[in-house]
Each structure stands twice: as C-alpha cells, then as structure tokens.
Amino acid sequence: MEASFRWVPVTAIAPVAWGATYFVTHRFLPADHPLYGAVIRALPAGLLLLLVRRTLPSGSWWWRSLVLGTLNMGAFFALVYLAAQVLPTSVASTIMATAPVVMMLIAWAALAERPGVAHLAGAGIGIAGVSLLLLDGAGAVDLSGVLASAAAMVMSSLGYVLAKKWSAGVRVRPATDRQVDVFSLTAWQLVAGGAVLLPVAVAVEGRPPALDGPALLGFGYVTVVATALAFAAWFTGLRHLSAGTVGLVGLLNPVTGLLLGTVVAGETLAPHQIGGLVLVFLGILLGQPVGTRLLGAVRTIRAGPAPKAAARGAAPPGPPGPIESPDPARSCAITQAADTNR
Image (cartoon, rainbow, N blue to C red; front, top):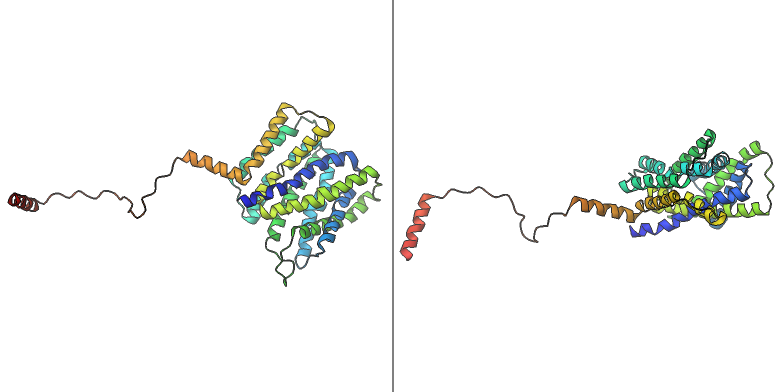
C-alpha cells in the first residue's frame, strides 16, 4: 500500500499542470481557433515523446492508439476549447470535477474495480468542495458549452479506463517480454489524436492562426509541460493506482487554476472558497491509501474489540455437558471404603 502511495505525487503532476493551462490559454492562446489549438497541443507533444522512445505500435495497438487518441486527446482537447469559449471557467471546471465518479463507474464495469466507500465518499466531498470554490452564480449558462464539457468528461473517463485495461500486460512485440511503456503509450495517443483532428481543423477553420511570441511561449508550455509531461504522469498513475484514486487526484485541476489566479491576478479567497479548498483536499485524502486505512480504523473502533483468542494448545471451551445424576450403588460403595480406611 505504501508503494502505491508513492505514485500519487507523480500522478498529481498532471492536474496541477492542467490547472495552469486555463490561465495560459485564456491569456496567451488564440481563442477563436479551438481545433488548431488542439492540434498544436497534441501533435508536437506526441512527436516529441515518439522521438524520445523511438517505438512504433504493433498489432492491435494501431487501432487501439487511434481509439484512445481520439477519446483522450483529439476530441477531448477540441471539446475543452469549445467549452472554455462559451462557459465560465467555474461551470466548466465543476462539470469536469464529476469525472472521478464517472471513472469509478466505468472502471467497475470494464475492470471489475468496485469502488470502495472511501472513494465514493471522497468523490462526493471533493465535488462539493469544487462547487464551493467555483460556482458563483455566473448567470445564464450556454447549453452547448455544458454538453461539450460533459462529453469531454465522459469521453476522457472512458478513454483513461480503456488505456488502463489495454496496457496491463500487453507487450510491444511478441518476440520480446517488454511491456508497453508509458511514454510510448502517451506518444501514440497524442500523434493519433492530432492526426485525426488536423483535417477537421483545415476543413472547418481554414488556415492556421498566426502566432506571436507570447502565443509561441504559451503553446510551448501547453505542449511540453501540460501535455507531454502531464499525460505521461497521468498514465503512469493509471498503471499503478486504481481508477478511483487517480480520478480523485484530478480534483487538483480546478484548485490549481483558482490558486494561480489568486497568486498572479491578486484575487482574494472568500470564506466559502477556503472551506471548498478544505473539502477538496479532504476528498482527495479519503481516496488515498492512508484515507482507506483511517476509514477502516474508524469501522473497527465502532465495531468494538474483537473476542480474545483461546490460549495456544488449549481446546476452545465448549457448551457445558449434561449433569449426570448420581448412582446410588456407587455412592454406597465409596462410603463403605471410606469407613474401612478410617
């Protein structure tokens, strides 16, 4: 259990990097080119990882990479850009915060990973915390943005669970005993997702946008840190942790966005937002091994002390046997023998 807990900080790199993406995208990237933005985010990151690993998919991994790349990268990035254009960040982040519950349900059906009480409680507390953090009565909400955000959340949750299922014990080539490493798996998905989305971007948005210096720096961060590094960390967590645990770690995404806005933009946190932060971290803690142990300890205390074990080598006490009635003849003989010995 302690060994699994070591992968939690690695997994946390992803939502922290994604939380900063809100600020970078809003401040530096062209908002009117979501398809090209998704392509520029996915394709260079995938080629960079592919250059590092120099491993191509084989066998069924060709079509699996295409499916996962569409769900986790191409369509997901485009839908997130669309939602960011028409929805307040608070509403979009709150919808995405329901991903832990969706991931748990999909993992239960696909991987037989039955969610524990601690994971479900952590998800509920975390979602409540995100709502306190971000829901501020933003007014009218665009239905298309809500549908885009919900679709992105469901598609990515399904894609993450499929990636966890397909990458478990699958080998790169039959002649070797080397499993698919996380960097290769991430590279294949990013390249596939960007390649699928590129012709759609050309057909819908025409020429790619002109990028100035800040936009190039912004895409540099989004491509290298928030995509290549972040998704490698995320899929590493999925390989070593349960889907429910990884999903709860993802709640750090909106928290990072809020804290970054507080530090950079000088925003102040209201009392209910501070309470939301506490609930989010409590929800994440419940989904980790230490939270599971604490919940088990509470159950043990409520159940009372266990009965003491019998002494080693001694037979356990049984029910009392029937009381035999005294034999009159035997009693008389014993009395006579006693009188003779006197």
